[in-house]
Length: 586
Image (cartoon, rainbow, N blue to C red):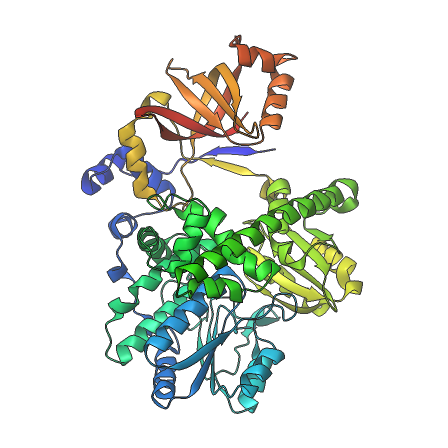
């Protein structure tokens, strides 16, 4: 059952509005995002790249820069080892672009998701050594690869780690003992003694910070690197980082650059997916471009996505874009089948009673486990781990809810696991098949989640009559963008609205268009893009048999709902009219 919660956070909205030249209503929305004080408000509304913290505040930054500068000057062979997801690919691209433009002898390697698994492994280290690599620079991985890095060091290689994941730790008598890898330099803002104030950067952002400082050490203008901010933005949104603080500034700036990208690969992918390049938002990265970039690492090789970003001719870029889009289309079909199987397991077995869902789908493509886990988490509002057969062991991906720290909970079960890593809301793991049931039992025995923790919460920013849905207000809402995790789209609500009439639209009959009226007698068009069948069945249950037909014919007396919505302007054939998009109803 959904919990609808109206946020009531107080402040001097009139005073804030006057000082920052916004409406009191917008001031209220910003306060609901816990932006408090003049400095934070200024950063939120007008933050610029110049306001980002100095990369030298990161632990080991100066040491890493010094090592790399020397290696470049001595023409030593440098290998960037990334990861196979959107963050790892963009981080690899950023490091390669920066290093090569400084004259480095640099190449890259990215693990194969199926054959190699996540992050550094012995095979990648051996491959680098055989290829005559002097220095390895990791990105978006490495913090948990102590054994592999020790092996690289024993072969005489220099190793620099750039990462953003949690530092592994062991707990003894309530005390945490953090385990850093034995690299020559470790740059990860999540280190307890790292002085960088913003801890929420993605791997690509950490890589970008390193290249900035390396450029400075060569006396080069850092502005030459600014074209790579679009890759930081793509990685930040694609890796589902919180869009707050520095991330918000990086994504805002990166999106504006992406609209005018000079990267042939991104240009081809934007064209191939049919996105209007004048209106590219965080949504398009999260749900259109990002999944295509991830599809390479899921179903083929992430080196294909890196090749797209590094394409030097339009023909090559177009070919790679089309291949990635085709891979993503296949991925969608495979995902739907796996989600259906996972939901069936929950409904038909005792797993429905578990507060942590550990679902074993032996035939699911292991690269899709994380996506399936995310979809099942959305459906059942609880932590989910999807496990599937790998070449030797069982591999899995987990997706969590806000009240459950998945990495820490898996850490308590580390005796059952061969390998694991991640953070609060997502994790990856490998274990023996015999330990699958034991893992499910132990996670649930340790679990302290309550029913309230697992209920889907709909946080409502404010009740707002339809008369307030004006072009001016809708335009002002753009000041809050980009939206995403940590900076969600505002949610407005209206109680007891009357349904006046409705019809089904869309090629697949997947849109409901309604005419509705609020308690102040303002009528407006409303669109619903959710599951139309469930919505219409709900009307039948609530208002009796034949409710659908009455809605379609405009005979709707007594049909009232409370809704949450987002306001917008419908521009049709030059005529602009206010409308709302309904997000929840009851």
